[in-house]
Amino acid sequence: MTTLTPDSPARPDAPTRRAAVVTAVVALVLAVLELGFAAWAWIATDEAARTSDDPLVGIGYLIALVIAVPGAAGALLAGLGWLLARRTAGLVLAIIAVVVAGAPVVLWLSFLTPSF
Image (cartoon, rainbow, N blue to C red):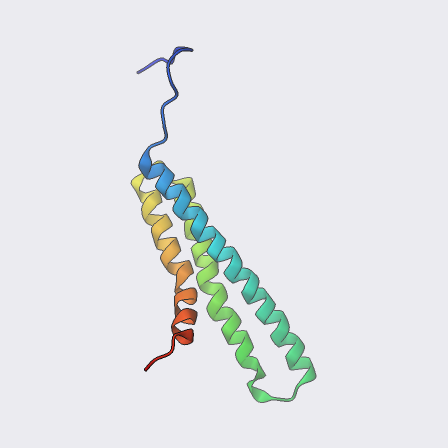
C-alpha cells in the first residue's frame, strides 16, 4: 500500500477510466437528444390525432417509440458504464451504449443519403 506525501504528484486517471467516462457522456448526450425528440414526436402526434381524421396519423406514435426505446436503453447502459468506469466492463458498456443510442441516428442518416 502506498502512502501519499504532500510533495508527491497526484496519480493520473487510468486511460480505460477516462475512455469509459468520455464514451458514456457521448452516449448520454445522444440518448437525451433522442428522448427529447421522441417526446416531441409523441406530443405532435397526439395533437395531430385530435385535429385530424387521417387513420395514418398513428404512425407518429410508432416513430416516437422506435426512437425512444434505443434512447432509453442507451441512457441506461451509459449510466452503468459510467458507474463501472474503473473496470473494463464499464468501457464495454459505454461502447455498447453508443452503438445502441447511435442506431436511430445512423438509420436516419441512411435515409438522407441519396442512392444512385
